[in-house]
Length: 316
Image (cartoon, rainbow, N blue to C red):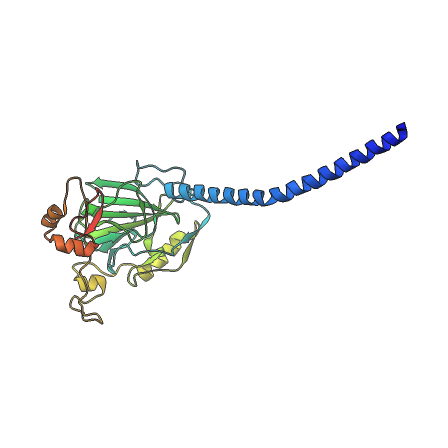
């Protein structure tokens, strides 16, 4: 075989190898593409899980530098504007009576609303989030709780007779925070309720209409330049309704002897007990002046149900 023929054969073989390699590479890329898409989807899901986990551990992390249980409030720089989601809310109390407005009072700044509640009335979380502070302050808030919410707000529930949550506990809107009371610097049973953004107190009437037991809208657009004036206007519209003594009918808007469509009377505000170590259904029933049967019925549990420390049981 001549040198020229050998060269032609070798050239043809090289070309064939390049073509086969190219086709093989294209096939490999074609097979790899779905795998890449799947990996990208997995990476996206993992990232979402990490974000959700971080959000659960530190709600509204984009607004707050840290998460700690040392201080009740520490004012930091407010954003120029911030959209606050008010959907999926729960009114902290069914009370419609505001006995003291946000703003100047007795020569000092009153940084929340006072709402008429009775000792033992149920207090609920306004939005979902995480409990940051559970504390007792004899010369101030009394028994109080601070919750940081996913929408950026922090809410404070003060002068309660009892707190029923723990620090760092995730909480959903409507879950029980504590019971109404008259602890701390207080002259009568009421709930002192605050709403704060970056530690700065904002008038709760910017967000809540207690008379109508509703929020003011799906969202509130906070603007640093105008929120104080907007707060004064909101307070004039939805603020103080009076002072002095009130009946439950005046507080809740429901007649005490009113009957519902099925002939049943309005139920008394539900009350709750937080299970402590060593407690049983029998000891709780005795302590709360009720029966085991009633506790089981209200909580839909059996008499042999094993109780967990920290569990919340309704007893009335």
